[in-house]
Amino acid sequence: MRSLLRGRAAAIGLNAALRVLIAGVVVDALLNPDATRYAGKAIGTRGLVLIPASLLLPALRRRRGASDPYPFWTDNLYLSIFALDMGGNLFDLYDRYFFFDLIPHAHGGGAITLVASEVLRAPVLVGVGISQVAHILLEAQEYYSDVLFNLRNVRGTWDTVNDLLAGVAGSLAYGAIYAARHGAVGWLSRRS
Image (tube, rainbow, N blue to C red):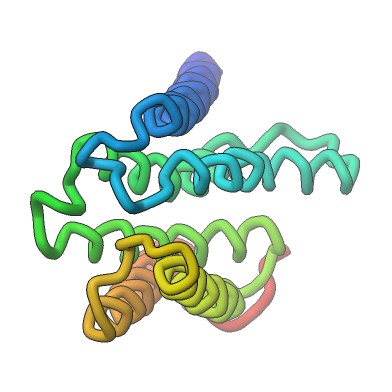
């Protein structure tokens, strides 16, 4: 029981830390939009959409009237997508390391796969499908925001294709790890 409480406390603490990191980078980007690490990326403006998006799991649970314990670890996995992206911008990793963006795209694909599967209580393959549709929409948003608002998030067609492939790899890798831990049933059938 004691280790369960420690695990829950760690999950709550990590949840708070991820939310502080996300909000902190958004505030920093709004205060320093011309900093090299943020210039031409609209990180502050994007953050104004990202912060409400980070509240998706609590909003869904409230709407459903869920009474079971809050799934902090699932929420932490979801928040880690935003935290990795924001941290990558804060430390200028996207510009300093040419292929860095493949890491958040792979992690995001995998994380959305598992979060969708958990939240919807659906098979992992449903999570893979949801993740890929979400990733295609993200890539379209990046491309069109560059075109319409003269930003610099996409470096060319090769960048978009590689990001999408990284997302597929992340979805399949995370899904395979999940299935290995929970049995192959998790891939194809609904869990109770």
